Length: 110
Image (tube, rainbow, N blue to C red; front, top):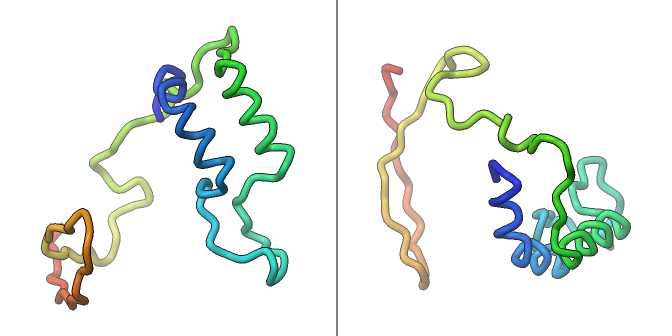
């Protein structure tokens, strides 16, 4: 999501995945306790976001902050890593079962 226009286009789908609690992803079961790193939305956050979407996702008057977010960078932002592991590419089918594979990494000269 790099602009308000893109968010607007995805807002109906966002409403669906937020209401069904598929997003933001959170696999832990609240029946087993509280979690310090819980990223799920609160009831109030969910209500506010869904209400905003159902009201047409109105844009504010200020500059679109998403346009300031940088794109993909081709350099290491935290410094060159000690080791880079390259794995061979493989195709995943759209459905069905994928047998377990063990790929042996090769060292990169990056």
